[in-house]
Image (tube, rainbow, N blue to C red; front, side, top):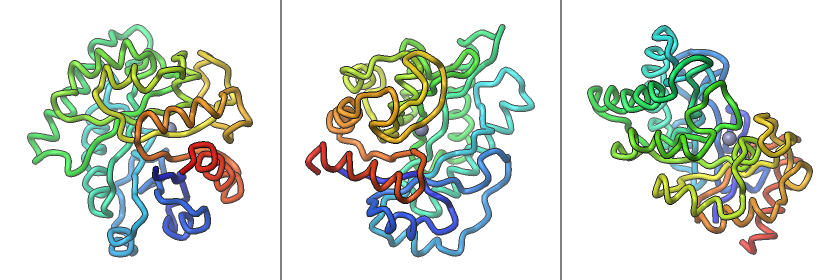
Length: 258
Ligand SMILES: [Zn+2]
């Protein structure tokens, strides 16, 4: 069982060491921007490291948008980040499922997702797994309700899309955490990564507000159970810096016996 944290991108390996983490996730650019990632000075160290590297795509990306001035640049930016993530030896690029917004047809969002993979194939393919993450909310979201994830997978499953299960997002999005891994796997066939977060927001609140494990509304045993059942690595995206995240990692290790 490999457990890690979402960390500041300046020196991810130092952040991993400070937390005793076996995995790290970070952004390659300001997550609110649409910038192209700059080459990193620590590429060789990252590639050679024993620590598993995951890259999170910017929040600005919404490949499901009905607005082509958002959708088309999002598609291109995702491929750009995928190439930069592969460059640093990442095991996957995590991207939110996105949303189509009010008044739009969710079916169009799923088709847009298929076009992401078709576009990437026409450009030589994604150089690493793309892990689509479930979201807590989002106006007409593609990957909040698992019924919708099933429709999404009808479009992207054949391209080898991966799945990142966020426990905060699932809970706040209105999906029961009991037996969740089996329900996801029945749809996607795989869980590549767990985002192990507690939730400040209540069940089905639609609020994306992460909390430290045991401090929010989720029973930590359900988070541990999800990690164990999935067999996937886990990343905590929780507050409190080194101290807060180290405590979350310790809790997961302790309760899972890892
Ligand atoms: Zn997450």
